[in-house]
Length: 192
Image (cartoon, rainbow, N blue to C red):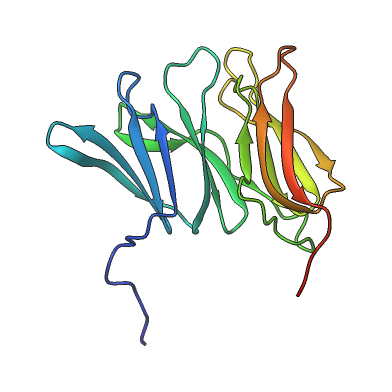
């Protein structure tokens, strides 16, 4: 029996994120290289790799989440297998722990994938997260503010968008505290 296996670790960085992950006093750099997650820290000797972890599936999104009354961040990870989960650093075991069970998106396989650059957004107050995974659809999640449940994402709703060709999106600061999103989109498809 023969099989094919990669000899070298992945070297191409697909996603990078600055986050307070391993300790509340230091910022770390989280890199996603294909299916490998690496956590680096800047020291006097240069960049030092503190931890690596293999993920089942190619990492397609990374996002920082800051739960209420926490001094360290959670890391939201999405894979090409349409699985989404939060991980946190466990200082007792020096390992990454999955905060909640993996969310699998199996409902929208007939839709086209989003062409947006920003597929995962977190509002400035860190209460809401929006994922633009499919053309014309926005999934909205909330980080609860009650004690004990502050690290678990709660699905609120799926919002249908009339603008199909979305290029970029971002949350805006608002004075009222209600989240607002700005979209950059094409009004029609141009072909030459």
